[in-house]
Image (tube, rainbow, N blue to C red; front, side, top):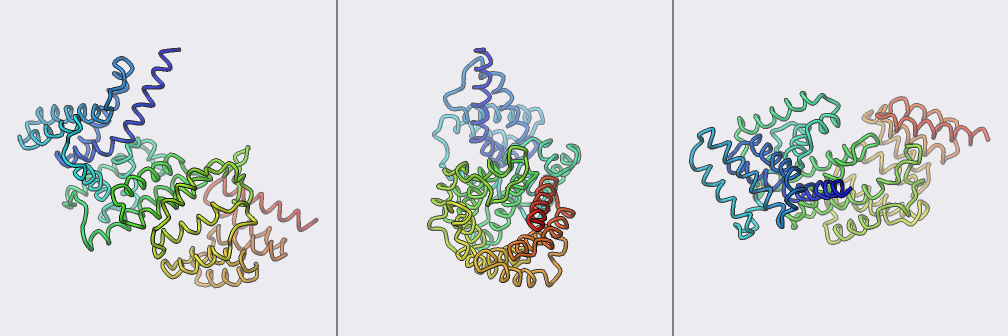
Length: 413
């Protein structure tokens, strides 16, 4: 039993050290060697060796420094065998200073991680490739797990990651953080990658670990770029949304709408952190406005206490900043709760007029909900079934069919 406890404690220590140091190690090795695969392989080998040695030797006083030393030494061995130029070997030797803690300035470490994030999220790469590369290179997520999230085979995902790294090399994508106007242009793309990564974890059939990784990366980015308000806003948005992760399903695994969740079981520490992070962030940005909408839901003591007029007002501003059919759909729903279902239905009809929301399950479900509240339950039940027919996942389909049955039963009653 003691051996089991030691193994568990060691695995937890390795996981904690990996979360803290993995991206830093990979970023530093990429900066020096220019070889993404070598950097990742050496970091992974260091983690494997830690799992083997730490149960016998004990967890080192500086776990991150231990991992950096092992990864660096492994890179040195590989490069020596490859007879590469002496400059790279000399620069790798300099990384040894990290282990003693009197390294180059903290900004150098910050720059390494920022370089890695901005390179993984470079617009020259396809958006899906950016997300996958971010997961693999910064988060250390196994390729097999990324493949399952994207519904492809591991070999296919391996090829995609290889192509992305090759694209970085062949296109001469610089391993640096943009400055001035270029930073303003590039940062939204980085945030979009984190947002998509979070969505992959938050969706009904998503992998929660991906949402947690998006939160971890958003926290890191906020530490590295504390003056960027939209970074703080995005982190706050993630925290508010993810605070409900334990209450989104009932005991049978069925999805629960926001009004039916047990708010006592929400992660109130995450909500409090989100409010602190959001405090002081500018209100003009898209993520800041979305975060304030999410905050209205997260801080409401009950569904009935939700400040829908405030949410509707925030959606007015969001529609100006980021006009889109989906934003207009959500705005219609907010107005339907704030000012009555008839108002919501009128706005929804406007949002759907261009045809962009045709067969979009959430648009059909929103119309069904508004009609049910307006009294036309028979039509609402039919629309819930229509939404279920085009739903993107089995959990969403079951939830919509349950709403259809419930609405029909009230109609007949």
